[in-house]
Image (cartoon, rainbow over all chains, first blue to last red; front, side):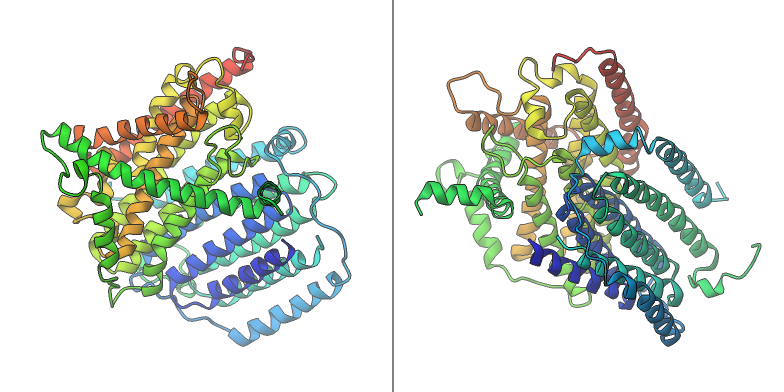
Length: 156
Length: 97
Length: 333
């Protein structure tokens, strides 16, 4: 199981890199969907069953499909525009990566252990995280209204 | 299970996403990079919620927020396409159309 | 190591057991799928005063074998200007996700691939991947008709997934568990179609639309799109898209039986597995019936049905169910 998870996280990183590097927009959206699915598998490996299913349902099923539809609607060739500031970006990100990676090498904590079952997460969302949960519902409602307002046609 | 490969995965995702946000010029690709960063945060939140489930509950809130963000972001991208026909974040410099 | 030890060893390893369950589901789907194609053609012939297939085997029952041989022996054509990798990958993604969804279907109290905690949520999640496969097929074909068919399919699936999920959630609220096994066990005294009539109607319409059956099969309307998103496929890849469609239909009829008609619950004198298969096939025939009885809607009418009628109805159903549950009406379940 451990080696399977190592392979999956390697594939997640490779496909995330391909999201950035791929010239074809549809290819990079598909790589993105694949890495979402891999992250869902990582969630399942630490016992977070509910989050794994939600990750696949929302990220691959909703976000990924919306990305694909928008690529179809907006880009005629399906190709993306060139990148800008490649090398300075690598330097900046490499520096930041060194700063994050250096202290985290020494972390040897165990992960997992708690079972993220549906009942437990539901109880948590309606007790400790009740106020964020309600705020999220308002945010989602305003996002729906805002998106339909932004995308409406003037000439109707 | 040891935490290290979760850490490596999430650091890798956050760096790749950051590089994408800095260098790419297509707004949909920038949205994709932001999604990668949010996923990286979620990996850490889920993997290190060992004593209680607060991290996992919080990760589910993050997923909902990112769905809302993608919804609004793609609406803006589509409007941009209707106005300019050529999507490039460098070209978006008018305060009012 | 004798057979019992081998079985227990396989049973204790979730990965191996899951793979075996998916394989068993695949074999089941291929046999029942082949048979159900024959049943559908005979049934269609009956409804339209025709004979249906008669030549191959007794009553034409081996017609699907002949079709399969034809499909295997055909050329596997890939459109030269399309996106070849995406085109080749699409049917595989479609079929493999649907088979993974099938591995959690309980055929009887003991014959179940994986009794995961998230149960039916996993099934909905796996259903939600199939629009991606359809988009891949439509995009990779580099063909107007397949792209239009794929877009219609995605719009239809996105708009009908919400009423489908909400009507399932009403059942889940009543039972208090996402595990399909517990949902079936809660139907000991009364089957849920009697307690959830509104939810059942919404679910039936939504599963029709999800599986793309005829009143809602705008995605592959032959007269205007020449067959929809799989028009460029040929040979075994076309066979895989057809198999995906049939797995969708079979999973839909299994869900109807499991959620609303008591799963393997029986009247005795036959083992539970047989009862489950019989009920599933009755549901399958009823789902097929509408194809030959009801004419096709327009795409805007389909989207209207999804958003303007089924979604409010399913929310209303969920509200009523929640109110009744909180008043303690279903505490005996």
